[in-house]
Image 1 (cartoon, helix red, strand yellow):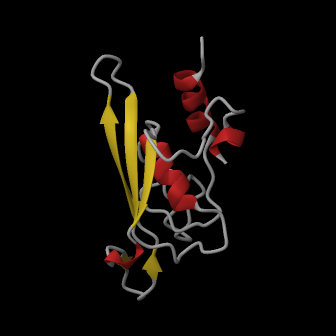
Image 2 (cartoon, one colour):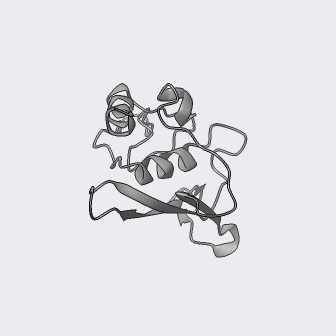
Length: 131
């Protein structure tokens, strides 16, 4: 998804050692958030390391606690947390009317079809382009 959105400026490879981004599933940890309606929402956390010389993000670990909300749909939580590791922060836009937000970087997002904005794509391309 991220590779396609950035025209392959950012690419991913699976590796068993020295990964830049690690994913750790802790599904049975029960660290998910419950809201008043009693519905469980997918939650995860990204922890990043910053290279002191370049001030760029160097490595990151993404912890996945629950995967129930968007099961069988776009993995917005995984994408959201990966974008944190790549340097994006939460967006400040949120549509309170329907409780849905189309920006995948919203800090309150329950929309399984949320997408990365063009501004976020442009930022990633500018940071990670070679040259």
